[in-house]
Image (cartoon, rainbow over all chains, first blue to last red; front, side, top):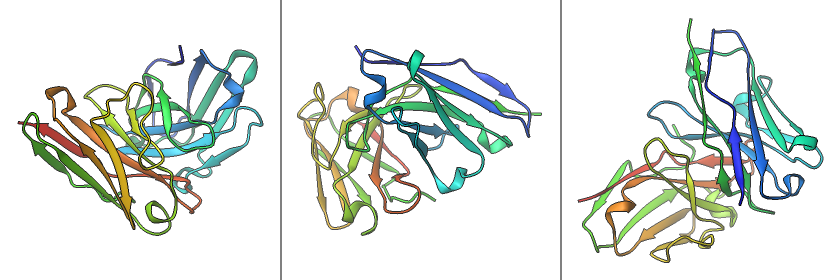
Length: 119
Length: 111
């Protein structure tokens, strides 16, 4: 069965960086795009970007351009999302989501990783 | 302010039907088939309920259906059940640099 298992919660200071991992299993990792979506406390979902695990090609939401980097390690079927220059309003749960082939809907999601930014 | 507009809340009684709207523009909802709907229970990850406007993933109840007219997509839930109480989000592909946009979410209350 498809599973996406994310790394554990993080507490970071303003200005620092955080790197969240998403380990995939149960399907061909390089065959499907991976999206990253975040959700601030009590707020809605926000799309951050996507990575093509096969080529490593990425597309980032304009809001995060210059601050986010998405990478992957195909040898261990793991995707990564790194967000730099953290601010307090980056406090959120960060999700990875496997995307339907040729589509933009996320059919399997990780359990979420809470990133808290606080001085 | 979200790119797609959803009502903040809707409610219905068990057995009734409700519809949640999702309004965008011709650059997103109105221009492409890539409209999805997600259900999210408190503290849980979102679950895909509808993709490509009206397609249901395997395992999703046929009480959930989707449609689109112009720049507005809709999610209809028929035969409401207590377990349907959750937040619902629409999303769409968009022609901007930000490829995917979400609605602000709708809280469904089953009375």
